[in-house]
Length: 264
Image (tube, rainbow, N blue to C red; front, top):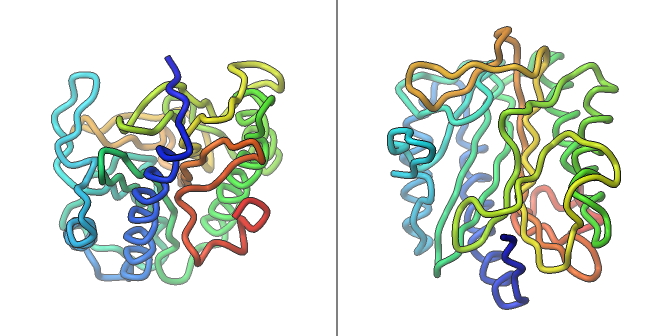
């Protein structure tokens, strides 16, 4: 069942998402060659706690998986999502995905970005740009009266026109007092299909875009998903609220306001 949010609840979600966005921005600045992903995780947890929030991801479990051991996920290059922070050091040219969730005053914030570490390789930069633009187009499609299929269609057609593929195994989701709520939000689909988009919905759109095949494998840690062909993957995620005037980006950081200006 979809829990439509009141204006007060959306404002509370905005506060949580803004904490997440701020922490993620600070992490992106710290993600330099030589830094370990564990150091980024420790930094994230400290910033989250200093903000008066708690990490949504730490200890989180789903579908019988072991509890997630960190406050953020850190996925590098062929790792798509749910990478576990470790002593692995970032290298120049890495394509890093950072995903974060925070809980404050009973509401979760959730957002993710890709970071080009050092001088990017041309393919990584193109994948980065296409993935970010796909999210922007998806948000523009998230209008009251449209459908979830319109969101997926916007992503899929743009991404595939650039020769990349859309991950099927993981999708977006509703957000509120739970980190994952209904509805599921596929990043592929057909125009006019799927659930109608309603005022009061709060959803996370988080396209995961692969350089090669959309198929994936799960590593032995039971969490980290990697591309089946070992090629690159990128991701961006925003939490948005559907208002009578269109989508409101709850997790928008000031540094990205110009890019997402139409719905800032």
